Length: 198
Image (cartoon, rainbow, N blue to C red; front, side, top):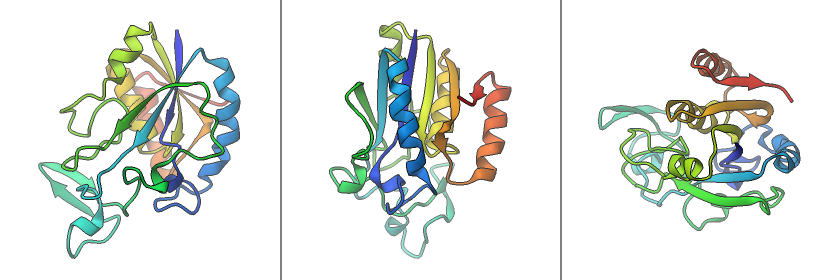
């Protein structure tokens, strides 16, 4: 069985948001249309506490997009985004959510970032998404959302690691960096993922 995973289609990642993906809103009509093809639709939601370690403002003297070492991992520092219960953390009002059966929140631990819908970046804690999908009889996931080169990519790679077939549809994702996206799609395909156009 296939499931469609909608990754982080939230206000802060859309034009006008705190960490806007260029033309991120162009995927929304495609994503809304795609949902009709799947019996199971899941969404992920970035859901950060205000003291999250990935926010540059929580590191005096540091600026957004600087990279630091944090607990043995490389960490990009971001503008404050998707703070719990803030307007920026809400799903786009243009996104159809009627078919979304479950929402998996990530990035809730102030001490570690979480790009993937399955695990935090250190793979220390699971969100429970893999178990949920298995319980539903899912063996293949199709991943759409934002940003294509970051949260979509890491969700897709973890899906493969968890034994699911994984597909990314080009028209249903938009990257923060097109160059990084192309490189990461090559890595995703080399690992057995499918990167297709509609």
